[in-house]
Image (cartoon, rainbow, N blue to C red):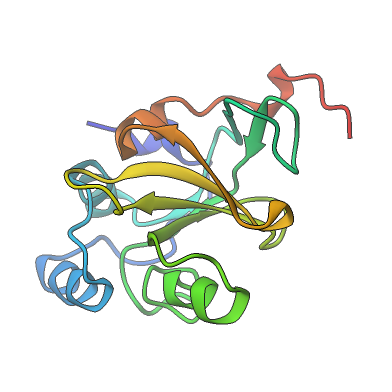
Length: 164
């Protein structure tokens, strides 16, 4: 089980802890069942700024040669602007920015919308976690086989030599 004290920085959650009722509404609106690890984390700390701000990438991105930057995990809810069903939630990125409709956009990157992290539901089974790079014609790059692996794979960006 993911520990919110190591996943998030010291800032507060974006929404109240997740309830069964809110989960049911959000999953119905999104049309997908959310990963258990994401739900468990939201029950204890519902969205917020990541403590570790980068993830290795298997190929160059518009952010860097060997990693992506990550910023905020969306809350599971609909009241905060950056909640899955909020004003700047998953549907916003598809409708307003033209991101491909592959699943659920769950995390923002420091590029202010020019790349995003999504749960990719295009294949059967549990969703994979992918990076979608708007600056590279919405290039999709697999980052992790599941949500928990993605979160545990986060590192401090300072571990990389940033050459931008």
